[in-house]
Length: 125
Image 1 (cartoon, helix red, strand yellow):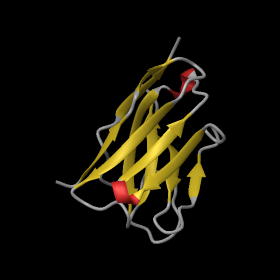
Image 2: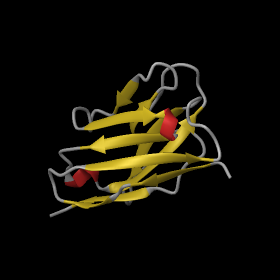
Image 3: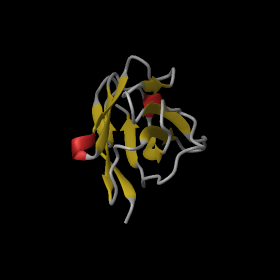
Image 4: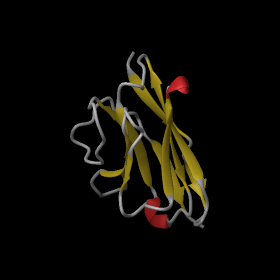
């Protein structure tokens, strides 16, 4: 079964850190750009970050620049999202998805498919 599985979410205090993982099952991640997205209650899904398949180029939403870092380990078939200096407004369900494009990546959700089930991140004191 082709699927992406997110993990690593949890409850963290403001200013804390978490590392999310996006593991591929049933297929190899290497040929795909991977994006991280989030959705808070009552809000639309928004792009957080992405990493390309080719040169590892990355993009970040302005709201997370300087605080989040995306990386990939194709040997482990996993993409990571390191989140630091977390804020209450980062609270959301975080999803990863894949996009079969040759170059670059986008944080716009529409080209992506094979969405995972999500992992909850709650930032609260």
